[in-house]
Amino acid sequence: MGAICPKNRTSKARRDKRRANWKMSVPGLVKCSKCGELMMPHRVCKACGSYNKKEIVKVG
Image (cartoon, rainbow, N blue to C red; front, side):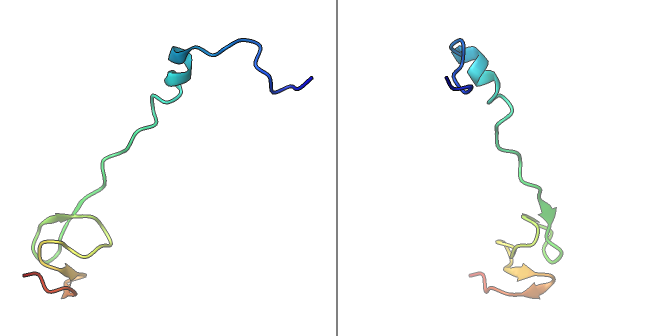
């Protein structure tokens, strides 16, 4: 006889309560040091194409 077998069935409400805190969080955004646009930290800015005040990608 296995110890894993549940004695009673878990209801949908009880099961879903465990997933109540399982959600995505808002990404932390910082201002670009060159243009001031909001961007993800440690990534190239999509607005001006710079990273660490240096132009990395040419933006049209």
